[in-house]
Image (cartoon, rainbow, N blue to C red; front, side):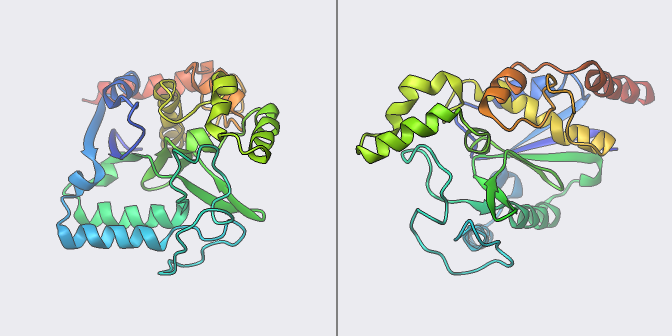
Length: 266
C-alpha cells in the first residue's frame, strides 16, 4: 500500500485550485505532494518535449468505432466521426486520446525521468486532455483511468457523464436551426458541469478518492449510490454525489484509518 500521494497536473481546467485539492486529500493522507506541471516535473529538454508531443499525436483516436491497436502517425485534422462526443465546439479541440495508450506513454515517461522511488507513491495526473476507452462498439470518454499512473480528466468530468435528456433534444433543434450550441448552457447549465465551471473543483476532489481507494482495497467504486466514490453515469448523479463530497460510513472509515495507521508507525 503506497504511503504517499503525488499529484501532477497536465494543463487541467484553469478553475482547478490545486491547493484546495491537496488540502482535501490531506484530510485522509499524511503525505500529499504536488509536483507541479508534468512537463516541468519531467524536466524534458527540447528533444524530449518534441518526442512527447509526437507520441501524443500518435495515440489520438481517429475513429470512435474502431479501437486504436497501436500508435499511428496518421492523423486527420478534422472533427466529426473521429470524436463525436463534445457539446461545446468553442471549448473542445477535437482531440480524443486512447486512455490505455496514454497511460502507457505516461508510465514510461515518469519512470524513466523521475528521481523518486515511485513505488512509495500513489501517482495521479490531473489532465485537461480528453481520453476514452473502447468498450462495446465505440470509444467512451472517461473521467478516471486507474493504473500507474492514475489519470483524472477535468475535460472528462464535463464530457463523460451523460447530460439530461432535454439537453440532447434542445441541442438537436439548435443544430437544425443553425443556432449557436453554447446558448444551451444559458438554459440548462445548472444541470450539468461545463468547461471552466467553478463546481469542477469540488467534483474532481471526489474523483481523486477513487484511485486512492483502489490502491488501498483493490476496489475503485462504492456500491452505495449516495457515496462520492460511487461510479456516476449521469451529470445529475455527479452533481448530487461527487460535487457534494459525501462519503458513506464504510469508505470514510477506510480512508480515515490510513492517516491514523501511518501516523502510528512514524
